[in-house]
Image 1 (cartoon, rainbow, N blue to C red):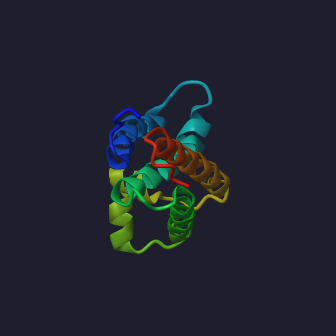
Image 2 (image 1 turned 90 degrees about the vertical axis):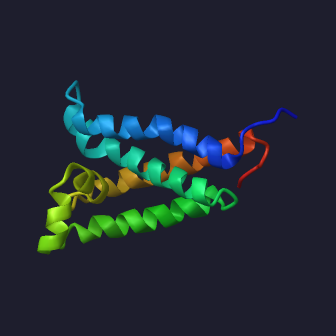
Length: 135
């Protein structure tokens, strides 16, 4: 069997690809830019957090990680209904708005689900690719 890099390294490599793609959705101005900026980035957001968690805890089940990420990001979406001054100051920054969002949008939830399914599938594939058979 070939000597593949460990799951942590594979996740970090995937993050190096996924992260700029996610940020690019926030500045995209081509066809369908309203959807790319408002919703497609949500897919990358979920995949990003799944890969981060899998890099930290590479033996965890990608599907359980995805369920946890979906729960947390759904809670963050609901948190957007709350607007205390300190939280608004964080949201006023690019990173704050990219990570926490600024406005509650019900249509974000289906994109979170899609991102979690794709992220779990990617993490599972990364585990199988390295012979670790993550489930």
